Image (cartoon, rainbow, N blue to C red; front, side):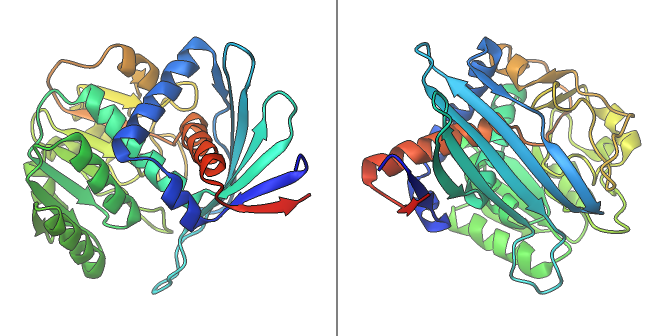
Length: 323
């Protein structure tokens, strides 16, 4: 029915999301389409309530040569998790509209899409920034994003053998270590981040914002030619340590040129020189320490949501709601 609205639950979205390699390809295509003008998006708009507590909107649209396409908007809430709480600290939904008529087509759970597209963005950046075949990967923070990044990077780099885990929670560190073991990797839970920084080819930080939080990671301690992926926007990294990086990149220079501290303020001690649009065209082939920080771009959410919606139509998934 023309007035129906398709609803896709978290379980259905998880079933419909493609493989990790396909996700990486889809996100790369979204980056290329942005460069060509076929895809447009606005920087993330954030309405802050308190430290680590905000509401965000992320709109994007894409069209083909015939003018057909979709527009999406993701509505996100980020709230610090309570101790021992089983509730996620990030919640999101995505609305998909027909580009030509503007008609709403679908509403889908966005939590899983946020999870996998974030890891796909990180992997895409690594693919075009890292000049070595990595053997070791380390995680500062061992929650859901770390677990998904482990899967995405194992898909990208079959060369990986060692996984280092550091977390304020022994339970989450052990859970990530068990996941690495299940992937036939050699995990190591480290009591301090220094050991991880000194021994890993890739370092992924996913530390959430919290009242009173202070940066504690020093890039000066990283291995030569290592890559830091700052899913936490850089808040856990010492500002003065950014000088150790030969190259600093972000997802979109249009959206952000500087990493961020715990209060959401720009860290002017560091500045991104390139973004994904440039990296996809001209990968970095030079050596030296490198960093990638990012807010997450709406184009990546659109790329995944469009695939999920199309697959839902093909498989007749979801619930039809009357408007």
